[in-house]
Length: 363
Image (cartoon, rainbow, N blue to C red; front, top):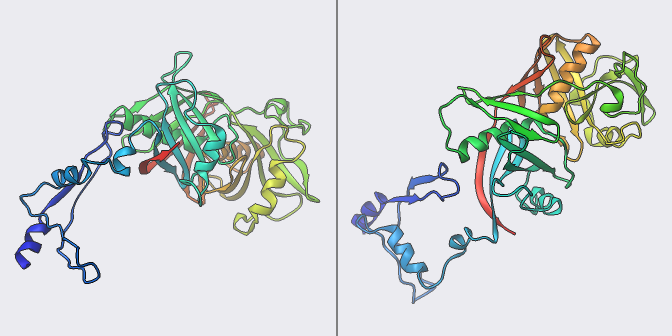
């Protein structure tokens, strides 16, 4: 008995990578024990020795009927990889063989459900590029709506493409077509992703917001009444609309940890002055180069991070005189480095994107 256990403990179990995700694999060594069953007299233990191939045993067991795990590679299944950027998590789908997403917004919302689905803030599709770009990125929020862009999502998108194309150990960038226009993410040598988010849009009608412009064509530190309270807000679009606030009129500096986002967030999002709804950033100024932010995202609610929101926050902080053009923005999921360059008027975002797991789900 002892000899059988010792021999089995040295047996290596290798799970081969699928052809669709050739870089993702698992390899471990497990001890295999011989056990007896007193409840089932017909029980026949299976002992795998070091000279026996687990793969061959598996073949014997499944040759007559394919198991569920073997069937998961069929066309009836959607293959995905789960990524997160500072806790803002996404289901990534390889959609390069079609210009239309593989699933509907309604199905995406079900997959995003954290109790009855995979769980995510959105589903992102990697589609073929158009208008000279390398790829197209589309995203469905957890409520099934489709935003123009997502900052944390585009970093995850870049890392996903690098895995699909087997581009490792290289500093590389992609031209990505989005609903907000051309976005260029660049994978750094340390694994973080730097993204040229383009120029912020400040013209009120283009954000869009019905608030009257009070600084050229922009809405800067304007008054907005929400649920009977007057907030000072600045409106910015990073391809998607943002309302940034540093506090209420005549009030003390905002302390974001004390906010009830679930209560106040939807009232900003659905306010009548935002015809396309809005993302809302509540910002605490720690120093001219250090901001702390909590966000209520349009279509997703309170999330741990929002890349476009962090960019909009720095733009608003500069316009209101709270901060300089290079800032660390602390979000609940971690920090992002944001730069609003004066020479080209572009906003650059740098932060991590990490793979969580990959799998298949029946359609």
